[in-house]
Image (cartoon, rainbow, N blue to C red):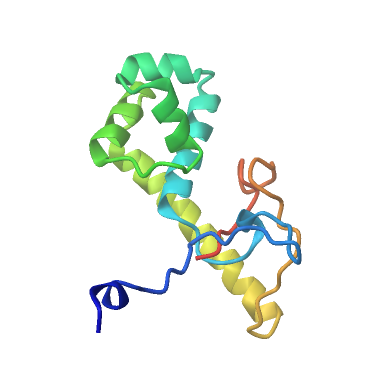
Length: 147
């Protein structure tokens, strides 16, 4: 067997790309949420609730505006040091951010469980409101990400 053959692996994307058959963004598909999305949602919600801009929090935390924006959008997996700095800039602790993200994870898991019970264990795929939608569950409006 060649080295090339032994180095090949199947890659299963966490977020499937939209296709011609199913053009909805991956964020609209049901599944387990990603931790970075939950933490980013919490950071953005708390920042906006305090009337702060990305620039304000960036300056106070010494995190670049671009990186902080990526973290808030769930594009970057921030280290605990970065999260703690952002939390301090918002007048919170790292424990506060993680607890809020944990509460959100529990509420999403409960909603997902209810959906699976109602559909008899089948995954109900419907318009869940894409990224950036608003709703009673927060800025992401109950969006579950496919894993």
